[in-house]
Length: 427
Image (cartoon, rainbow, N blue to C red; front, top):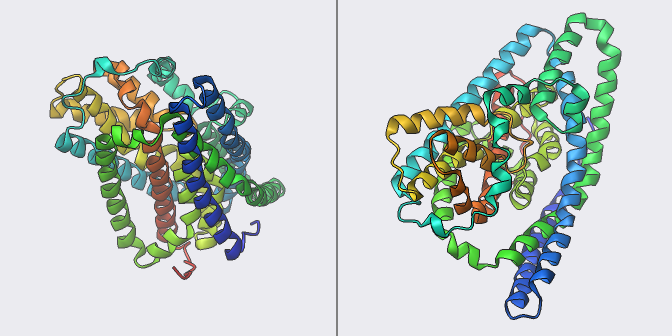
């Protein structure tokens, strides 16, 4: 595989990312203050926010351009190297077992905590600004059963690659890899080409990640300039209770990881430190996929396991998003004074379990799914306006948790397959 960045370079990148986040908060706060005292007009504020956010757009587009070829090439090579369909089925079965258990656990944590804290009780949604909900609500039709099936199975591989439909690419890659494995030696030349492609793209990762601090600065400065620091106070209860859920989920994931990985868990966390920070600051777990692939392999996970499991995890194992969906959906019901009995809530949990799969490449996917499920259970979808202003900050923790959950899942499966030789670095 492609060479990885030396430790000194990685440390500098982490420092630059943290500094960019702090600098973004300061600049955003200054611009927000100037807009309040009239020094900067409303149009000027919006222009600043839109323009500074272009830095984030550039970074995310640079990452997105390499995700599809990386997923395809690494997944095909990973499946081919496993040797036969039985091996693919065994490894895939172990991964799906972990994904299902992790998803159910995440959903249950959100459901239990939202019933304990009741964050939506007593809220007046009639006063909420629902203008931001319209564009999102119009996308919910994509999550009917018919469109859900279409979302999984591609009618064109080229179309799936062009639109970064990760789940469709995964499906095609599995068929391609299994077929290549079935014909054996004759497929070696094309597999060798895919290995070279994966190496080249992973080398590109090192170049692209140099833009990460700029992307972080743009994202943070934009949202603070528009909303100001007061947004943290205005939504403190919802965010606080959600963070309690994140802490509980991290504890459960860490406990499960420690039971299987033992002391190596702390070295895994050290290895994925940069992807966690980038996911947190850019609110995108997709943005760190190439870097996470590189770091897990460097940590000691066999490349064929990483190439197979990680793309599956991005489609089936979004732990942070899953917890948020039950938490937010029932909060909206509480805000409207709608009582949901335990049976209805369990039904909602199971619906979310299905409809949330394969949403990794959909912008603001959690909100789309929440609106669709709310409508299904007769909860006014306009209630999404309640969480729109705080969603950006919740998305920081969702994205970071998604990365953490998939890192543990990949490493656990690697150990189960005796394909894990942890590199122990100093914490």
